[in-house]
Length: 163
Image (tube, rainbow, N blue to C red; front, top):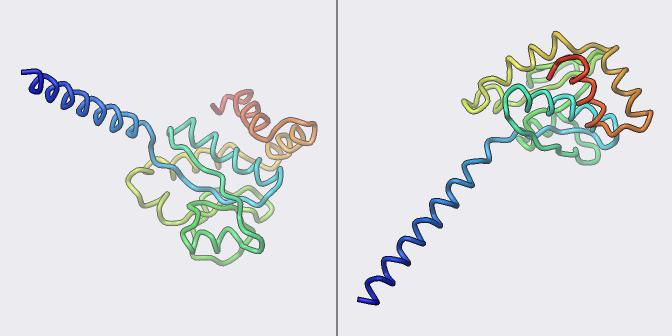
């Protein structure tokens, strides 16, 4: 009788533990990997994309620092990142955001083709209508004045009603 009660208790605890683990794992959704060059400019660009993307879709992203001598296009082709900034004229990657002066955000296949990211393209089109060189210059100035890139970008977006 005691053994039967102990077995029932252990089975119940095991099922509760499995339920708790699977529930907590489901809280973490897909992430996009964004390649950037080291430094404040790269960090500012990353936050420009990641904050807006997260606020509009709930999709999180991870900042990936490109290796020495590696371009974003190389990293996208090698499927090390999903998105990356580059100044190139010809590439098989698709430009999803134009930041002016030849700088574009390029995308690999996953953000544009994976069902988990169906809203990503729309979000970049909406951001494209809002962002221009003067906006980027204002954010850069705040970073030069001592703000962290993430804070400068978030403050700018909030002040302008983007998020």
